[in-house]
Length: 251
Image (cartoon, rainbow, N blue to C red; front, side):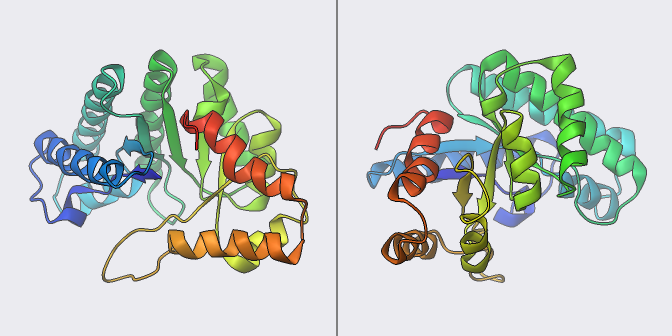
């Protein structure tokens, strides 16, 4: 399982600047360990979600530069934990995929670039939360990559649509597509097996089942195999081989 942290308020943690994000990591690491203790192999990631930028400005009254400064400090803290081997990666970071102000998109982009630099320096995974604009989305990341470098495979275009996943994987990046039945059944007939699947399960009691349950996704893959919609090797590649390469695990 790749377990990705949520924002402080999702855990009922009072917002107190950097300390609240440190508290999130503490809770998240404990959850990762509990999953490992049950016998799962776990990739543990924590980030500074682009939606946090809007929340911090709108709800907590922070000015844009304060928000940028906090986001960069959080990434620096996460970078230290990645360097120490405490975290496996950074995520989610990226840009808003909904309507917001230009300055907030810029703040999120600068935080993402700092996180990309951290991922490069410590060869860690990074999950990007981005708009799904296909080639344009990938080109914007590529523009940053040309300056920063690193391991393309570590850079995951999270919750990608088929168009974005195709463009990203053709350039050597990783991409994960939500394991929603109708979407996946369409994708397996159109894309080369260069992507992985994700549940993107938020585990929020107010949004049960969003986006999909991990166990439902497993049943979906089993049905695809039973229907012989694709060759068994296709499913093995997206569910085993690429997961092994990206998250450094062996089943």
